[in-house]
Amino acid sequence: MTDETFERVARTYGDMLYRVAYHALKNRADAEDVAQTVLLKLYQQGDRFESEEHRKHWLLRVAVNESRRLLRSFWRSRAVPLDEQWDAPVSDDPAKRELFQAVMGLETKYRLTIYLYHYEGCSVKEVAAALHANPSTVQTWLQRARERLRRELSEEEEGKGYV
Image (tube, rainbow, N blue to C red; front, side, top):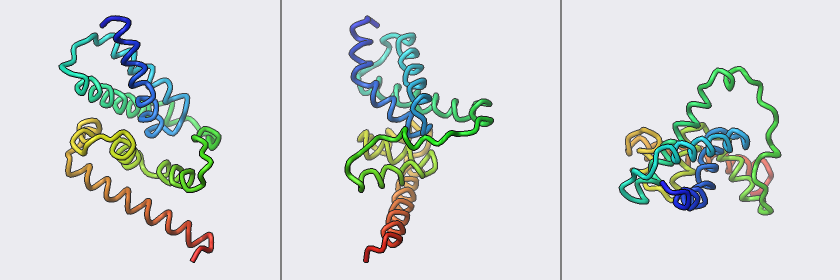
């Protein structure tokens, strides 16, 4: 892989890798580490991809795998999390901020499924491949995640006194 090709791919997919890792890990620094690790693996891999779609799929899969590896690490299981509320993206729109917080409150499998499907525009089949799951399982996860988000957001509406 030439340096120019690598730079183009890093510019094209770097933000996507960071966002996937952030949704899995809920931590800015860890997400940056995962994105950097994935790009390093890409550079070491060379240009052995059949197409740009194959490269994107490979990057997503490696990002998910690296995020999972970090979640399973000894250090992560023994560390006490600090309050990372400041780490969340800031939005002026309260509805978007509320939705983001609700999505980040979901379990990892639901959070990643929602993110890849709705925000990255991946198909169910692509999400299934990236998460090492069956497409029918991904459809179930999407349905359950939407139900949980709907329930949580409607409970918050009722709690605010909106009728």
